[in-house]
Figure (cartoon, one colour):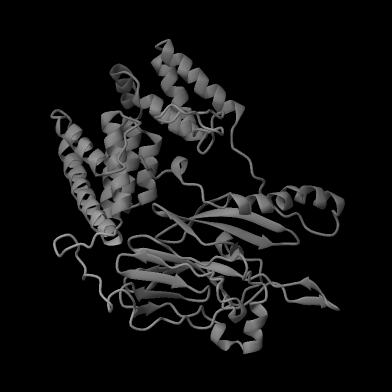
Length: 471
């Protein structure tokens, strides 16, 4: 089951890029030690798995308490993991698939994830002890989160006190909040999390319409559960939407098959000479990745959401009608580009990687995010004879827009004039690759040149652009 707290954030698919920068980052302390007077201390981040001996010892001690039925002590240890060891991992394991095949590599489970699963599996008398100890504190935090309509605070209530009624109420409210925002997928994650707690089933699966239907039946059978009406109405809603989505997917599969569909099996027009292509091609405005000499190499990747097609050329984001090619909206270039001469624009394009660069937006139901290049660079081209000493690397920042109207929701552009040093993490670092959306989070690799390359992965709130964490 997909979940929304920090233990379940999907890792971005930038492993190769991370390895390429890791050597530069790891050697930074050595270089600093060799030239202590030449440069100021720069805080860098090494890549490592946050596994500690302490959290392992606490978890194993808690498991021992459970086996000896010392539930008060076990509850205290598991709660310590939830509150003081957030984001830490347990030793690597090689779990087996349903087919019985062991994992080729080590899999490090989140300590908090395992602690919550262990709490859910405690006997009823132990769960009663837990609620007696933490329900009042959880209820107080829930009231504050509800009053502020704070999604992160609701997640924290469910994450921190997983056996309380307040945790179920928090995930129900979180799902409602996401549903009101138009984020149906995120809403279903939250409601499924509430069901997982109510059913005490840490392995609950909700990957398709059949599993949602089975979950609805399990909830309906819990006639004594006070949360049954609230859970059942929401799960039934997700089940109906999942079934409708599956029907649509089957129709789309048929459209792509060799058998021609009829009017009863496809919602769109039948294939024809006029329907299988746009009447006129859409030509992107001039951009750094356009290379007439290598037209076969295309760095621009479009993303479709329903009838809307989103494509970025690294300077602007355009929304097209997927079936007609009509321009629905255009973000235009970030402020400042129109004031540059052609020579100045060409100078800022010298560092663009036309051989391996990838430009692609990331889209959710209501928000589309793209990394756009800004009209400045922290360095200029430097040549020694015919030898290139320095080429300016493009400065890119994240921009978010409403998928329907194109209204800008937020961006990470530093304030003007900018000294190159001040501002937040998001304003000081450059987006190094296309962003990825996971639930209500946006993940992107970020770089900053300071005599060396400082490489991080940043995680931001999808709806506000606020930094949640960086590693």
